Image (cartoon, rainbow, N blue to C red; front, side, top):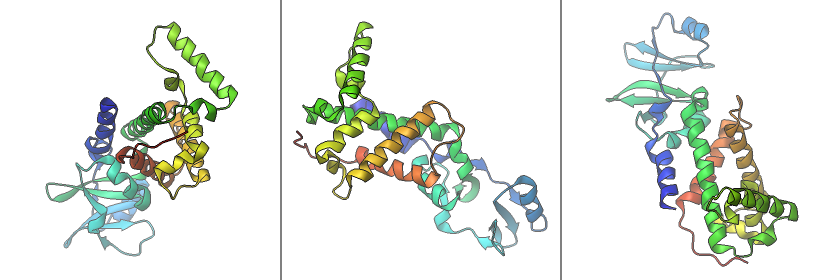
Amino acid sequence: MNEVHELFDFFKDHLSIRAIAEELAVFQLDTYLSEMGNRNFQTAVVATPAGLMKFDAGDDRLMEIPADEVFSLNAPLLSVFPHIAEKRRVFLRSGGRVTHIATRSDLDKIPVRLALFGFVSVLETVLKEMVRTFVPKWEQSLSSERLAAARKLYRMKRSRSEEIDLVQCLHLADLGSVFSKEKRYRIFGNHLSRKAFDDTMRDLGKLRDALAHSQDMLPFEWREISELISFILHVLDTDFPSPTFK
């Protein structure tokens, strides 16, 4: 599992917001409104005698750039993700000044899609290890159809001389079923209800499938994806006690 957590740490801590950021276009006082219209920008950064100021679509005047909307250009991408999802855009500084911007449209770039796919895949691997270690009778949590599908895949992989076990042939939905039964999901938080857990696992599967098939539009709003990321971070960042599952 060390290799899995190294991959998790890479996506979490070492993939910076620089990977999707755009260099800041700075407009002049007398032309920023027309430039915004021509470029279909929702935010303009304007050079003024008092320094750089920002104008968001819907504002009635130029405003200072709030300190809580400015992040380091080297900040981890996934730590800035929730702020972009909530605020629609963030400003990025380098060398003590604002030099770049990242918006919701930038969240659809390849580095983010790779990170999201990697996060869900790492979660899947961790859940499989938890099933393997702590749920000796996990087969009883699956329908006969799902168990038969896992066994069929297992036989196919073994015929190719792959060194795997049956747990490795479970899909994300199967893992969700295992932890949904017997209220095993409560290891991830006593606040969770079965419905909330089941919905989260279903949505993670839908997100991973959309990423795997390179769908142009992901099936969730960015705020919803941010919540899914929070769940994954909670699971992967927590040292759970060794549970006793049926």
